[in-house]
Image (cartoon, rainbow, N blue to C red):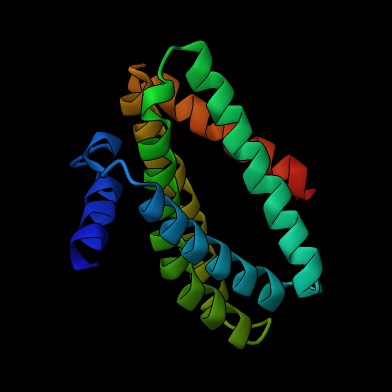
Length: 167
């Protein structure tokens, strides 16, 4: 377990790519369960959604993300890398959610007039931006495209997910 966590952290630091992730449907399912559980927790905790609403939204958004990515990878002839790419994306998102939860909890615990709310908000925005760059790196390596194209693809995917969420 520690080796997999280290691998995802190395991907976050852009020291290794999704090609280093083992091709394993069990690892994908395990990472997907952790991803889903953490996101359900955060969505129910931070919003008025019930667990059923959050589950449906998470399934729709994640399914749309996976479907679009599969289409792009199929068009580019990179379907063989799909399993590793999904596992890498889910794994780094788990790490980013784990990093963001304490910041979000601290921000929500403070009063509206607290001087710490703004720095915490900037830290959360920074995590989001870092996440876009990490995903861009993963797309760059998985699709053999330029880093700029990977980052633009990650930004487009993030904006599409936000549009699906209505944010």
